[in-house]
Length: 217
Image 1 (tube, rainbow, N blue to C red):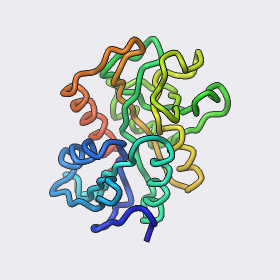
Image 2: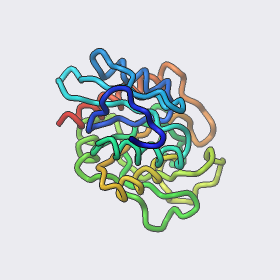
Image 3: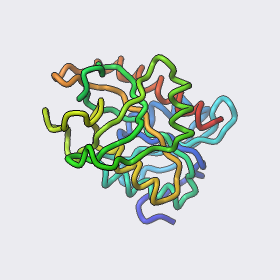
Image 4: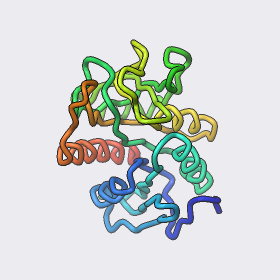
């Protein structure tokens, strides 16, 4: 049994990962038939159930920041998760990303090291996500910071979006032998314009449904 998670229901081999526990609940209700809470330890809400297509799927909160996400991912791997898709949010740093845009992550840099070797997602899951979302998403690179993205902190050419988890999750997934991809919602523009709450929920549902479809394939 992992040291942090305390599952009360079986964890599926495929999982959708989100930072916010509230979003985990919302996506569990959106993606699963009769979802059952599978973890509430440490406030990391997790749910498991079957998709309408009949596939077992878990939706799990990873908390805030890279360290929390890396620990949760290791526990999930110990519990048998082999494939996962992160559905997260971030702040635009590129000129082409606007609030509400979905970005399928092609590679993720870690903070000030952007421009050096990047952490890369699973090729097949990423291609399937990009295909499933089609014109509704952009395939681009991201950069992850240990704290909330400070304005102007991302080096030129670092990518289109900044967040707090993706680079760490991708790197840890490689260490664990786990297949992981990520789709991020642009929740705020580079100038600070924020996406409305309802629009963010709608974008999360689009991303979550694409993730569930890809994991069911």
